Length: 198
Image (cartoon, rainbow, N blue to C red; front, side, top):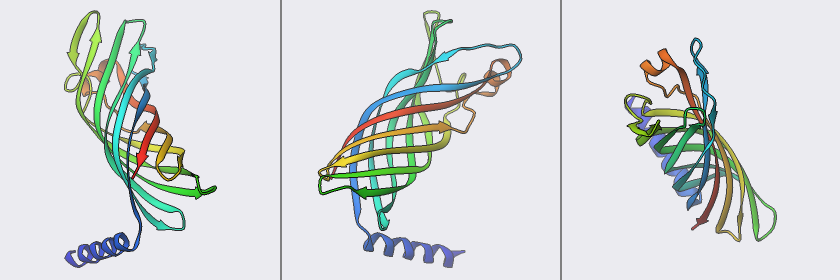
């Protein structure tokens, strides 16, 4: 087992030293929602909610336009229930990992597409209903979440980043009590990104 770990570490080190590494920071608007799968006769009609996101990212060139992207960021997700005058705001620390392909159209524009996954940990959040505010994590939502992502965008003049990313949660974020009484909740969201590549 130790030999395998050493070999993998050497391969990653060689890949890192032989490849170009890029860094960028991004921020923007996040339009998020929750996919609701009810239990019994429970009915919720959830609408999207506008939030924010910010991240620092790194990409490692692998081969002829292919690169591996990862980073760390903060992202607000949630949804609204207009019938119950309720809203759910959940803030996560998120770690994405994706494979991207970049294609240079000319000296000023490079376009890209990405596909991968993400893991997230809930930091804080609130459920507001009937004029009262409750902590989201613990009674309503579980802190761990994970899912898939896909995105595309462009980098202008090697620095200015414009991007769109869609993410879909694969884990039921509802606690056991909420799952038994209401149903299961899965996060999803669309990120509109503006950033700067160093």
